[in-house]
Image (cartoon, rainbow over all chains, first blue to last red; front, side):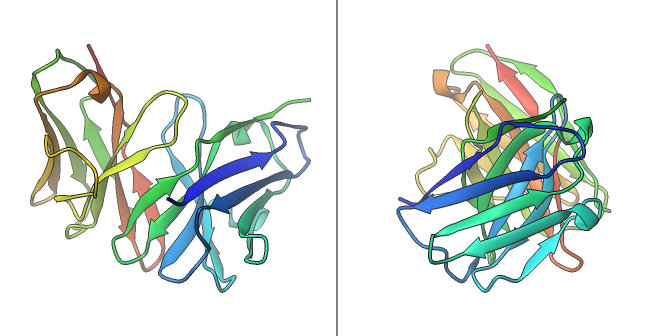
Length: 119
Length: 108
């Protein structure tokens, strides 16, 4: 059974770069799926950040596009998120998730990791 | 942008009850809607996709339906492990857009 696990810094200073990695275990990053980053700020609902494919092609939420880079490393079986110039508004639980492209639904999620932006 | 309006935000029920959660869309999304369950501190779990197709391994007491722009998740015969937060999600391909409902917290 494929599993996802987020890792990275839980505390980031304002104006710095948030970096997270999603490790894929029990399977490989392959076609037919898209690999997402999604976040949930405290008291708010889920917001998609962006996604990548096994080819490395990526797309982003227009509201975050200028600050986000998502990349894939198939050799390490992981994909990553970088969010630049963070503010307190970027404090959230960050999830990685796999979408079945044909079904337009997320069949596997990581447990999530809390990232706090604070000096 | 497509908006999803989920209701109710909070639902109190008992073991054995039948409950219904609704998600209304601001535009036609065909049947491209999914439902998830989330327990505190855990990642969401896919319950239903395509508005009404049960994900493998999900108990049959969960069901989904669609009537125009209104989508419904029904849980028949609540079990103790069903007390969680539920939310809906839609996916538009071009331009790429993913929207989540606000969530429904189901409590005893």
